[in-house]
Image 1 (cartoon, rainbow, N blue to C red):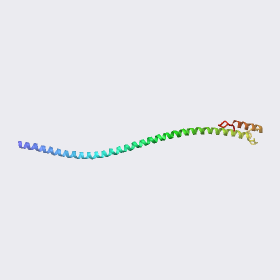
Image 2 (image 1 turned 90 degrees about the vertical axis):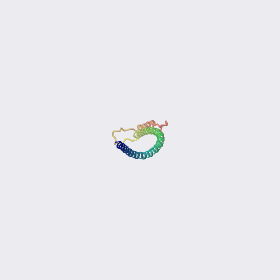
Image 3 (image 1 turned 180 degrees about the vertical axis):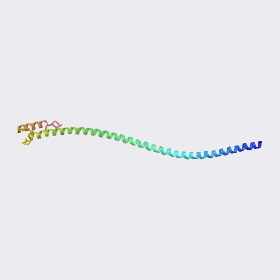
Image 4 (image 1 turned 60 degrees about the vertical axis):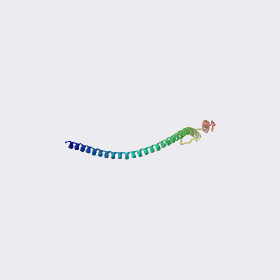
Length: 145
């Protein structure tokens, strides 16, 4: 009985040893795969670091460009506001000149018989109206035309 009992224990130890060897082989293949994944992961991390550095440089360039554009746009907006003010003044002055010229033209036009709504104006009255229209006209420098 002691001989068969010893054989059973040694058989059990042999089976357990075979299971351990099989498990070690499985672990070895998994470790090899993990090592291969580690290398690809290192390569991916290196690519990410490179891409991050490129992106940081690009962001720095974009910040510089935005700063330049902001300065240029600010000066252009200021210039456009000044030009708009000048144009507004010139349009208003042109409107005044047009109104005065219209008054002069109406005053200087001889009355015709085809216009019944316009009362007849004597030559003296027409000259007086034209003189009044000329006296109302002023230039921006203060001189009468």
